[in-house]
Length: 565
Image 1 (cartoon, rainbow, N blue to C red):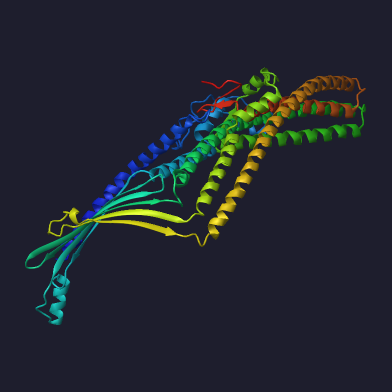
Image 2: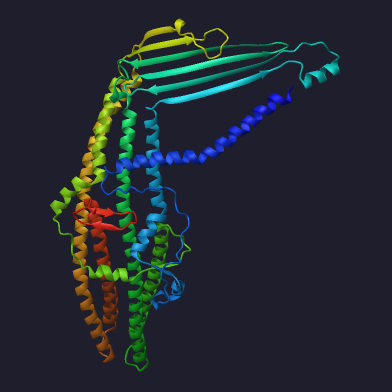
């Protein structure tokens, strides 16, 4: 008797567990479908927003398809061997990898997805929600094997037994109205069967429907759907933030790419400066051996050589560190062996130092019209205004009207038959006077302050946008001026070095002139490259801050007045 009732629930539980396990993948799929659909719906409201936002990250990346470096670079000293066989990445390659494998980019995609996922639940609240539940109990007394064994041990006999099964089911549906009301329908059924010498059974059931509607507090679409409205707008804000991040991330990858090349070029220049200083040192040491110069002068040049060697070594370390950091930025590992394409430096040099063909006043006005983050700040002022209305509504008394219809069981022994002729209908009016409103009062006052704060935040954001445009404009002008000065400085110091070397070969030179001219030439060459890189980075940031930098799904950008198709 005991074996059968326990075995059946276990089998049923196993079947349910298998069904739940098999459906986990479908739950994930339905969540993805709804979330991606929500993102797609609002993508058209955000200029420059992509429709492809897949959060499943590609875990592995293979560098096998890239061109390999077979050259050895003396200016990298003992690090030169590490770059033999390294994969050469162009800027476009780096952007492509970053927009596919970067951990930061993946995090931003997940934040966007989670915002859309949260919205799906807020929308779901205003759809019909169905429920189903049931249960079954089996009862017995002393006729099971355990009781019989106890009877044998104790000598107790002739004990009567009763067996019964009890089951119940409940089917329901509810629907929250956007006016603040709610409709609910519930069907219940209870069934009891007695198993003795005779079979008998009885059942009860009921159908209950209800409707409730607030009349003052929590009444109206604007009040009831505030949470849904905010969820819809939060997804829009997240889309704007994601689009802004894509632009900033593309600029960051490009900026760091050029910065790595700049560090590499700095190491090359320092190596050339060290070699030039060592040549001068060898010449002066030969002169000193012939008694044509003093040991003091040679020592000054030796000290300059040591300092140049230290600068060279430090620049190599700085270059390798920045290269390693760049790997992590774009989603590679520290062990991945790559170098960046020197041709990219030539490309930005060839583009010259021309600034965007737009005035500062036009750029500032354009930024105010196009910056997505500025629109979000303005929309958040509207959000805080709506919250004032919601908080004010919470100060009102609660007055709810309700209608309930209950249909009992037919009481004729037939399970599931309802007696509509004896249905009971109830209409009610519930109210709650706001005698204790301290919490609601504080919320209302807080909402008023939040509105003032959000208004100030918008004005601050507006000034911040203007300052960002102005700052990048100034940096472009500074870099262009630095470039012009560096070009002249390189020419001047090249002549100084030539003259110092010529005078030194004739025995007429001054060691300090040799040291200074060579150091100044090295610094001028580095500054020349730095000004080119800084101007290019500032120009990218300028287009980003103006709101006219457009980035596609692979991180490639277009800049200018017209949005790409």
